[in-house]
Amino acid sequence: MGIAALWMPILVSAVLVFFASALVWMIMPWHKTDYKKTDNEEAVRSALSGSSPGAYMLPYCKDPSEFKNPDVAQKYIDGPQGFITIIPNGTPQMGSKMAMMFVYFLFVGILCAYFVSRTAAPDADYLAVFRIAGATAFIAHGIAGIPDSIWFGRPWSLTAKNMFDALLYGLLTGGAFGWLA
Image (tube, rainbow, N blue to C red):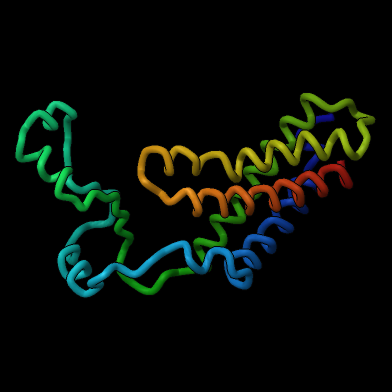
């Protein structure tokens, strides 16, 4: 069984996960507390005004040897420490972001098809295909956030919620592949 033969579960899983993701983020309550308002939003906005889009860290330290400088070390002791992502100004364009997410879900489906096509027999039963596709989708949707919690201070609660989402997406993907492969 080749990847091209799995076009239907790739497409169906992408559609299912797209709608599940929309429900999770727009209707379900568990992501409503992911982000907080800063203590003085207007002062923070003013301080960051004029920053071009990109990823920033503060205090900024280009080279670890700078930690030996007492002034730099004191900045870390005094805080705050943070990682900030600045995005372009303007009202968020949801259409293009949703289209990119659908393409991402298609990509995950293609990865699942690759693993299914390489590890499952052509006459594999539902559960065998479900396990391969579901595990692959879970890994693709969930594992990448763990290093962000380890290295960049992303709250573990946020990573745990995203892992739960990944489990849902993996179950849907596994089900689509098990049914249609």
